[in-house]
Length: 309
Image (tube, rainbow, N blue to C red; front, top):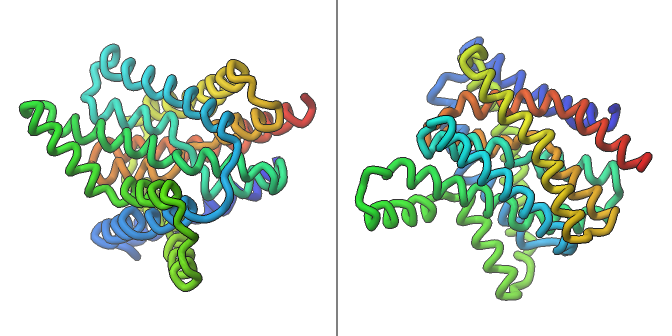
C-alpha cells in the first residue's frame, strides 16, 4: 500500500490545490476555462504524440486482451445506460468512458515500473499506443453523434467527422500512429525536448482543473453515477481483461501487468472530454476523484494477490 499511496498522494495534492484556488477565488472560471483549453489542446496532445513516436513497443497479445475486455465493458455500459437507463447518447457515452478510461500515464507508468520493473513497460507501451485513440476517439464519435442525433444521417456523418478532426487529442494519437506506420525516425532532439516540456504540464494542469471543477460539485446529485462508473472501472473492467487474457493464453507476467493497468482509476482526460462537450463533467470529475481514492486499497490488494499467486 505504501508504494501505491506514494503515487496517489501527489495526485490528490494537485486536485486539492485546484479546489482551494477555486474556493478562494485565486483562479476564476475564465482562468480554469483557459487552463482546460491548454491541457486539452496543447499539453495532452504533445504528451501523447511524444509517447507514440518514441520508445519500443511489445506485448501485442496482452494489448489485444486489454482492448477486448475494455470493448466489452464499454459496449455493455453504453447499451445499459442508453436502453435501460434512458440516458441521452452523449451522457451514456461519457459514463462508458469513465468506466473504461484509465490514468495510464500519471499513475500507470510509475506504478507498473515500481511493481514489475522496467521490463513491464513494453506491455504498458503496447496498451498506451492505442489507449487514447481507441477510447477518446470512440467517445468523441459518440458525443458528436449524440449532439446531432436529430439531424439527417449525412449531416450527422459530416458533423461527426469534422468533430473528430477538430479533437486535438485524437489527432495527436493518429499522427503518432501514422508516424510509426511510415517507419519515420524519432523526432529530432530539440523537438522532442519541446514536446517533453509541453507534455509534462498536461497531467498536473488537468488535475488542477479537476480540483477547480469540484468546488461547485453537489455530491448528492452524482453519487449513483459515480458509484456505478467507479465499480465498473475498479472491479468489472479488471475482471473482464483478466478473462480476455485467459482466453488468449497471455503469459502470467503479461497478464499481471495488463490487469493492473485495467484496474487503474479513471483518468483526467475523460473529465477534459466531458468538459469540452459540456456533458455531465461534474459526474466525470467525481468519478476521477473517487476512483483515485479507492484505488489505494484496490490496487494494493491486486498487487498483493499477484505477488502471492
